[in-house]
Amino acid sequence: MIRIKKSLLAASMITGLFAVPTLDTPALASKHEPTHKIDVVAHRGAAGYAPENTMAAFHKGVEMKADYIELDVQMTKDGHLVIIHDNTVDRTTNGTGKVGELTLQELRALDAGSKFNPAFAGERIPTFEEVLDEFHGKTGLLIELKSPELYPGIEEKVAIALRERNMDKPANEKIIVQSFNFESMKTFRQLMPNMPIGVLTSSASDLTDEKLDEFATYANYVNPSQKLVTKQVVERVHARDMDISAWTVRKKEEVKPLLDAGVDDIITDYPDYVPHHTQYRK
Image (cartoon, rainbow, N blue to C red):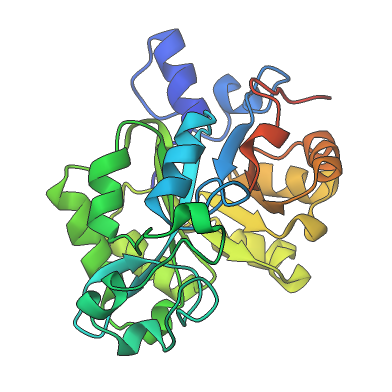
């Protein structure tokens, strides 16, 4: 499988080459130079400033010039794709119940803003298609399949929605699909061979050489909890031609250690905590 990395694509454009660089090319050797820009990902939108996974939060992320907005996709009882993090609606809305046991109409009737702040009263749970239509081309999209084991066929539904919008061959990796469910990501790789894939983990056991070698057969990103990130982990991920995105920054003092470790992306509720045009430091 050929994985086209954003840095490799840039290198090939600069040099006038059209072939994907191989592991022993100078382009790869220079991939993580000090000039490499670190991308800022607005977690569930700019969730520190607006109710998470709502259009208000996604617009705020774009307003704050995040490179990507991150969103969580689940499926309703009647088979629609919706954007919400928890498997239930209890924490973020005025309703109760499991996402997969409610219809789209029932979910759309809920208020997804007031619990965050009364000023956001009336914010609704968006559909996946609404977010794609509103934000494609305005910012990058980091799409998480949330608990896909609960929703058989969700990978196909997400792939169809992307293909219908000609988003199945994203330029410069501005669309990435990720999940904690590794089998789901293997399935997605088969469905959309050109789509950048990320694997999420909060377990150090997923960062062994053996596991990283396995991830490298189908994934472009290894995205661990920030507590697992060290310079050595970053170097081992990079050595396998994968990028690394750390989550979730909610304090300003959490930024510098990640910059020093050399991560590629910082996923944060507060996009303004990461200075724009931040570069790798060696």
